[in-house]
Amino acid sequence: MATKHEQILAYIGGLPVGTKISVRAVAKDQRVSEGTAYRAIKEAETSGLVSTIERVGTIRIEQKPLNNIDSLTFRGLLALTDAKVLGGSAGLAKHLDKFVIGAMTPDEMLRYITKNSLVIVGNREDAQMLALQNGAAVLITGGFATTDRVIRLANEMELPVMQTTHDTFTVATMINRALSDQAIKQDILTIASIYTPLDAEVQVGQPEQTVADFNRLRAGRNDFALPIVTPANRLVGMVSKKQTTGKKPGTVLERIMVKDAITVRPYLGVTAVGHMMQGNGLSVLPVVDDSWQLLGIVTRGAVYSALAELGTNSQGTTIADSVAGAVTPAAAAPPVGAAYTLVTTPMMMNKLGTLSFGVLNEIINYAVTHFLNAQGRRNVLIEQLALHAFRPLQLEATVHIEVKTLDLNSHTGVFEVSLAADGMMAALALVTCQLLERTTR
Image 1 (cartoon, one colour):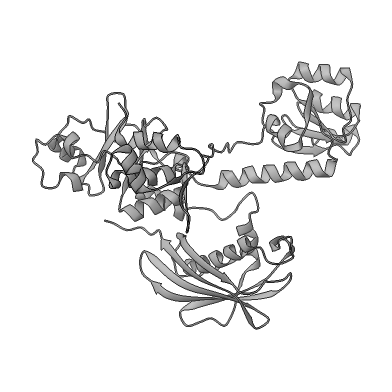
Image 2 (cartoon, one colour):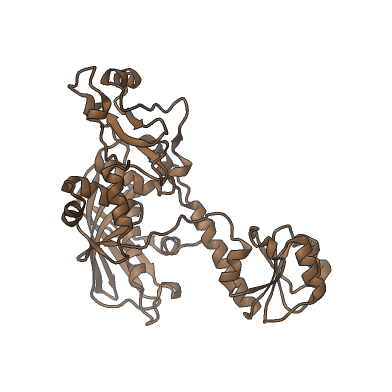
């Protein structure tokens, strides 16, 4: 039988996209306490079922599927380039590792063709045959057809031969961007790579066990938390030192366990989970699948170790990378803060020729994060950013950025960030951030 927490999540999942959700309404509809409704809504937000929008409220959104961070498949390439299959459809599930533009002689092309690569070529039968014979798929540009001989070989080799009306340059640009996006996804660290799976090191308990059993398993560890599971390994609760303090040794765990425990999924980002753990004062979280089967646990130590070891070299270029490359520290800085300069570039502009609002937010984000990083605060998460833009910033404008500290402690920071160009104020922001630091509770 599903728990109240699961029933609420199922109820939220069944609401139409765009439905406004409130704690009071959910509690009333599901006949639960507002506290139980609140925890379920926060879980739904973490899982991507709902989103909280400032001055609008919590809205049911379309849940995004788990991203496939493997390389691009030939089937995915079909949709990307608006192509159709001429032959070799049995190989559409294969992964694309790289692409080669067939603008060379066959002998010169041969050294670049590898297995599972893609040869982009026009109406050149010799190049198409060469690609298939060496394990590569073919994308024919310009809307050209091909011969029956090529199609027979494609079917035999189970390598797709595809046709698109786009020109070679456009297709190469599309594929390069897709491969870059996949590389960026691979750089995003998720819980799947750091959690401890169920094995001899992960202790689990059953509802019928007692506080005495918990104390024996805990063995003096302050950060210990015990997942409570059914015989089928389904998570039904969590027990920590807080629940057992003052309880008799014979007290059954089912009576004191947290039944609506906060859980995480393997595909969640490490930074988001770190924020969740610090905000709720938790040192251990259970990792479950979508059926609430316990997969393992993730500890705060593992999260912060992973954040500390995050590399800075990305295989793709994001807007954040571009901003980071353009911002430089300035000599003159406020007494408690920092100063930077930036020259706007074409890729930062919107269609009106002024600095994109999203890029403006990223500049402020980077300035605050860089300032805190320089002070040894490595893991910074922006929580709120109230931005007032007074006038547009033009292409190749020199922007002066100043960060002033309003409040800073071990867990949070509040900053005022001003941007000016040509001696005039262009924007002013108030930024609140959370510092994900190692602490013991």
